[in-house]
Image (tube, rainbow, N blue to C red; front, side, top):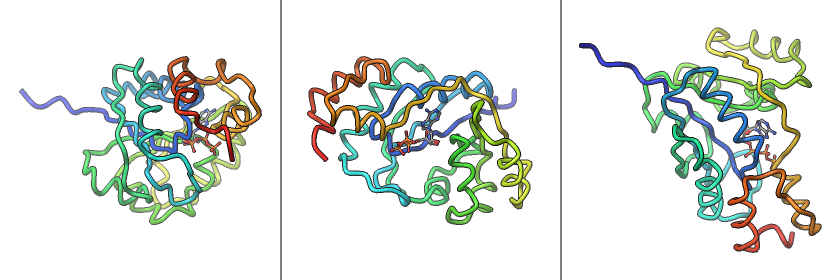
Length: 193
Ligand code: ATP
């Protein structure tokens, strides 16, 4: 009997902190692409943004956030560039997930053509997404057929909004899983800038 090939997804981010929008994307992607496994990669030092929260704290939060998804396995990603991370993982044609806002910036990533050789891309769109613009981005790539857009349940939440709310003393209970809110409080994260 031949081996049953695995359909592995990869979802990378700063996760500073992880929130319900990340979880919704992960859940919808598992359903849409019938993923057997989802590697959630907490990027230690993202190439494109400043992250102040220690990677170990972000890892702990992501483990709590994704604990309800059986397919998800959370780990630290020591690579700042997706291309290096994919080369190191050496998976057989995985699916790299991102939000449509990130896809717009994809051509500016390090070696986007190589990224598309190493992985397919699943880009989550929301009702607000400019599909014409995304289509233009996809068609400008060397391997446009390697990108698939998929719709997700829209959740207007971002990590920056959560950090801002904690700093201002506002509740975040509707925006992150309960265990994440408790851990943010326990660790005293985001109270100062
Ligand atoms: P920040 O507000 O600090 O920029 P963020 O909320 O965008 O952070 P990241 O960890 O940078 O979080 O995002 C990881 C991935 O999750 C990216 O591909 C991003 O497009 C996607 N993402 C972020 N927020 C949402 C959301 N509300 N719904 C769906 N996808 C999201």
